[in-house]
Length: 262
Image (spheres, rainbow, N blue to C red):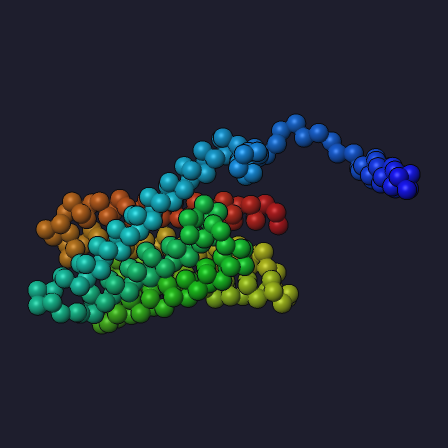
């Protein structure tokens, strides 16, 4: 009775040996991209990669803090600038246009940044959906804010602040429409090529955001705002360009890569 059991075990050993024998040869990896910790069972990236990611996340955190400061100052000024506590067209212009550019459109661009804290775990399609939603909301705010400002001056645009604001609005609308076309051209394979349209969308979006934040910086330099708060005005005129430079760095890199790959 013992012999069949022994032969059965020997057959199993031979089969295991044969399976292992036929495993394809794998070249030895001399430099692993990650480090495996046996105790925790987690793969860690290399020290330099981890340090660089930490630095990028730190700058991203500082950036979001600057955005929050600027938006808070805009709302506080707009809602308290009138002595009687009233809300005027100018107050609403500041709230809508400022929030549209500084919050929604800035965050729409940052959604696609690979180091952005709140979107880094999202899928590519999820990022595009959130990017489109934020751009839609930002565009609505910008349109409302711009026309409230134009209503304040009876549609007469004579200042550099007003001219730049109208230009920013025009580019923002073109960028939004081109973004929709680029999205659907990739999904349903329209006659319009997706990559050139994406380049067009990103380019116009960068111009729109740049003009919008430049317009905002001009607003902080106007006597209406900086009277009795000159130090705050100077600080905000530094914060906004810093926010702009950080926000547009990744899109500029992306558009250069796409142009090279055409």
